[in-house]
Image (cartoon, rainbow, N blue to C red; front, side, top):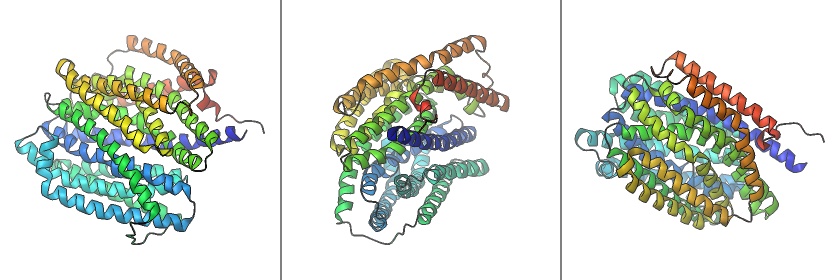
Amino acid sequence: MKDSTQNRENSKNSTLLMFLTLLSRLLGIIKARVITTAFGATSTADVINVAYFLPNNLRKIFAEGAITSAFIPSLSSNADKTFRNKLLSLMLCFQLILFSLIIILFIFFSRPIFAFISDFSGDELELGASLLPYFIVFLAFISISNIFAAILQTDRKFIPYGLAPLFFSITLIVFISLFSEKIDAMAMAYGVVLASFIQLIFTLISVYKRGYKVHVDIDFKNTEFKKILKTWAIVVSSALTTIFSQQFSTYLASTLSTGNATAFSNSMIFFSTPYGIINAGFITVVYPLLTESFSNNNIKRFKKELQYGIDGMINLFVPATIIIMFLSKEYVAVLLQNGKFTFENTLLTASVTYYLVLGLTIVGLNSLLNRALIAKNKAKFSFVLIAIQAIIDVILSFVLIKTIGIIALPIANTISFFITLVIHSIVLSSDINFKHTISIFLQTIAANIPMTLILILYKKLFPLWYIDGSNLINIFKAIVLSLILGLICLGSYSIFKIPFIQYFKKTKN
C-alpha cells in the first residue's frame, strides 16, 4: 500500500510537471513560429539557428543537465538549511566567476569561434559573430536560474519550477514580434538576454520565499563543493561529447543546400516537445528520489523508483512517437508554414521529424538510465557510454549524409542511442525487472493499436488539408485532431490497465 501511495504521488507530480512543460513547449512552438515568420528559411535564419545552437547546447553543461546532475545528490543528502545555503552560495559564486571569463572570451573571439562551428563566410559569418556574445549572456542567466531551480526540484516545489520557463518564452515571443522588423536578427539577440534575465529573477524570488539566503562565499575548498565539482567535471565531459556530436550534425546540415540547417533545427522542436515534456515529468521527479535512496542504501526503493520511471516513459513515449510520425507534415505545416516558410520547407522539415521521432522512446530511456548511473556514483561509466554513442553517431552521420542527405542525421542518432540503451540495460540489469518491462512494452503497444488504426484511416480520408499552411482554421483542426487522439489513447489505456493511468485511481485503505 505504501508503494502504491508513493507511485500515486509520483504520478501526480509527473502529471503536474508534464502539464507545465506542455505549456512551455507550446509557447516554444509559438516562439519558433514567430521566429520563422520573421526570418523564414533564409540565410539569416540559418545563421541564427547555428549561432544559437552552441549556447543552447552548452545549457546541458551549465544548466539543465550536468550542473544539476552533480548538485542535486549533495542537496538530497542533507536537508539542513544552513548546509544548503552554503552550497547554494558556493555554486552561485562559482558560476558568476566562470561566466564572467566565458563572456569575455566570446566578446573577443566570437568571429573565429563562429567560423569554426559553421561553414558560413562573408556577411553571414559577421552576423553570426555579432550574435554569439549575446547568446552567451543568455546562457549565463539561464544557468544561474537553474541553480535556483535545482533547489526547488529537491524541495519538490514543482509549480514554481515548472512556471519559470514560461516567463522566458512569453518575453521572447513579445520582443521578436515587436522588434524583428526594426532590428532584424538582433531582435533575437536582445530578446533572449531579456527573457533569460526575467526567468532568473522569478526563480531567485521563489527560492528566497523558501527561506534560503545567498551570500558571497568563495570557500571552494569545501569538501562537499569539491565533491560536486568532481562529479560535475565527469558529467561535463559527457555533455561536451554530446554537444560535439550534435554540433557536428548541425555542421553537416549547414554544408547542404539552403534550408537544410533550418529544417534540422525545426525538426528538433517537434522531437524536443514530447521528449522535454515526458522527461520533465519523470526524471525531474525520480532523480532526486534515486539519489536519496542510494545515499541511504535503500536499494529496494531505488529499484522501485527506477522501474516507475521506465514504465511511465514507455507508456507515454510510444503514443507520442506514433502520433508525430503520422502527423509530422500536418504539425509542421500548421505551426511553421507562414511568411517565408514555404510548403517545400514543410516537406523537408517533416521528413527529418519523421525519422527523428523514431528514436523518441530509446533516447528517453537512455536519459533515465544515465541518471540512474550517476545516482549510483557511476558518473565515469556514464561518460564512457555517452562517448560510445557520440562516436557511432558522428561516423554514421558522416557516411550516410553523402547518400541519403539530411535524414542521415536522425537515422544515425536513433541507431547510436539504441546501441547504448542495450549497454545501459546490461550494466543496470540488477536494478531492472526485464520481464516486467517487456510486459509493459507489449501492453503499451497493444493499447495503442486502436489509435494507430484510426490514424491510418484518417490519412486515407483527409490526406492534404494542411497544404495551405498556418491559419486559425488549420491550427484549430490540428488541436481537435490531437485531442481526439489523446482521448482515444486515454480510453484505451484505461481498458488495458496501463500502470501510469492506474496510479490515479483511488485505492481502498
